[in-house]
Length: 632
Image 1 (cartoon, helix red, strand yellow):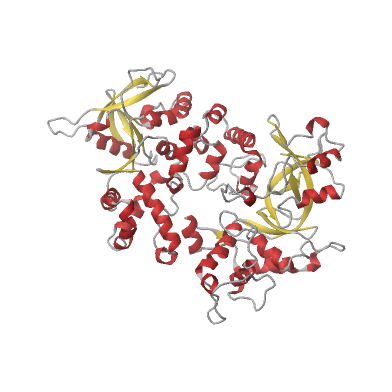
Image 2 (tube, rainbow, N blue to C red):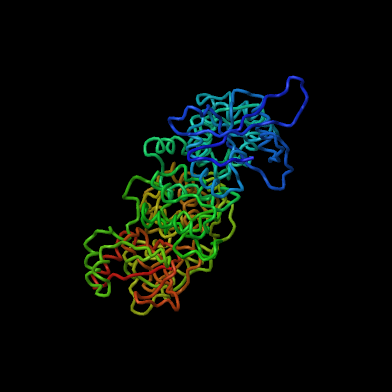
């Protein structure tokens, strides 16, 4: 059925019209080859179809293509039948039919061209499937509302079934398929079709914007409604204009930024597609380096992505490396994130703030004079390496970084995580979180305040804080930030909010209490034990989010911090020249080489008191030296 494609060629599917005699026959289609070259006049206007393939266990539907009977998945068949009823769609490009799926070489080439196929299409139809579950009601609402009157109609539509219909519509599988990001974002004006009804996708962009604003302003009222909850594509709706502008003005985004942003809940049948499925949104230089190849080992693909990310984004890639126990790809180096798992670690930089004062600067700056001194003191590092931030040995899959050994972990909590459903967090983020329980936070407090854990002769590093080690603790729990976007330092008044989180009451006295007003705090006495939502929402969700899948730890010098699961006593705290946050490394037994020890990368860490270069300056003051760390 398939003849080979030339360079920059695609197949288009032409659907034969319904017979005039009204007899229901098998759907008949014709495949033809066309060139996408700019000077090619033979390529007609076509419709690109964005849809879900369905499950292999679905009962196939038989159609006729080029005179031969062929089984297709029912969702594609329903879309083609809908297209036949609307001749204005013209020829169709549908991946399952227009690409020879049995030819891996052709499949790889067509995947590389996918972005151009959707960008070149005269129109893109997003097919959600046949009408069901009151989808007509939802589609009619989407077609009718305007931005001006939507807020007014929110309340009216709570009782008439529209909201439930919208929720079911946004839970359809299309919204979680990884390929749909580039298919929608690269298209001219994509239209969402369900059954016999269609609406511009921009209507859902507007709906998501207004819904997000409304839910932030009145969480209690909206806590039972889950529109866009756990819907991966909601991120694209939220960032729609921004991403489209970057595609238009810059030609794309960095691959690493795309993978980090689109890391939660996306589905794909072939794990390679976690990477290949977003390549069309990436900068041209990225697409030249990472070329789809389904015959290549997935491990090598992920290493290539990590190396490219280091080249374009520096050490930020290390911030997304999750606990090794969660990695599913065998043999992956410790410094390479597993992009196939459902959720990629967000890292400490959980914000995208243009304000550089918000960013951590544990390394001060890679070009700071302190590093010149530290490398000068390192006689064992060759002269030609002293200006390097890092190096990659692709043959051995080793990542080399240079930095200073700051501390040693002496205590790490045993994964202090319990399942916790927090409405505030869920409403703000759209996801159920794993957060620290109250008892676990109290245990961390007990450990942090136990001065007997300080080694003999060690001076408490937090003695100068007004609230001492307790202040260091509550600041550590939230990375010393005051907002979801990372504004820091946190205000002193957060100390008493920590007490409320742990004990449900305001402390009788607090050395770190800041002036308050009735409207912003509204603290009650012991009978009420509550505070105004505006302040409570500032600390409690921050604590839950920052502690998400983190463990609390202490160090040999009495410092405290948060890091990823799997860290244990004896692990090293390192500040790298190229890294804005400290890292936890573990010396690998039997890994001695001519260049020194080998290490396993365990994760980044928040260590209170060294996030702005203090450890680097201290190393210079004490005559310390730079070290070479080979990560395996």
